[in-house]
Every structure is written in structure tokens, then in C-alpha cells.
Length: 126
Image (cartoon, rainbow, N blue to C red):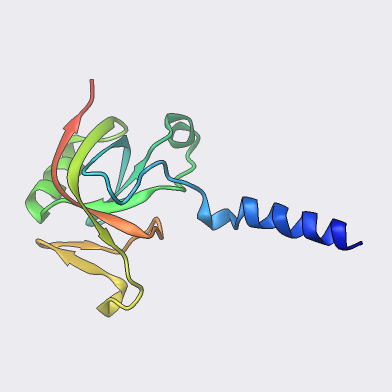
């Protein structure tokens, strides 16, 4: 019985909760490539084209560009693969209003990730 419980505990520890699925992005990157979705003043970046096409938006990483660039990108870039350059910022649930104001854009972290991207540049990958 102890062996079965130990094996079950090890199995659960190895798989972790569903919310901990990997986005494929890490907080030590400065360039992020994926398929983009815009929602309000933030974007969500999805690494897997298959998940994007299927409409599965998580796991993903949230971020934003400065307000004017964000609005321009949201109106001209859609359903395309992009490269976002920026700085990752660790997310804290203690932020006032559960959001972060980045140069006029409000990041809500809809992806509920450990970090968000403070974007400085975005380009469509052809």
C-alpha cells in the first residue's frame, strides 16, 4: 500500500496542476515568437499554432506595447505569427486594481502567467 501511495504522490508531483502548463516562454527571454490575440489594451501570445487555430488561448503570456503602438498593432495585426521584443516583468497579484499600467496600456494578465511582457517592438513573421 505504501508503494502505491508513493507512486501516486510522485506521479502527481511530476504532472503538477493543469494551470501550470508551460507556455513555451520563459522570463529570461527578451524576444518572444508566437500567434497573437488582442484583448483590450493587452495582447496574449500563444506559442502553438495548433492551439491558436483551435481557439485554445491558454497557456499563453500576456503583455502590452506602449498605448499608441498597441492600438496600431491591434488594428493592423491579427491572426498572424509575430515577434515581440520586450522585457519580462514578474506578475504580482498585489498590484493595485489587479493591473499594471505600461506607458498608457493596461495589462490585466488575462493569461494568468507568472510574468508579463512589457513590449518595445512587434513585427509580423512572414
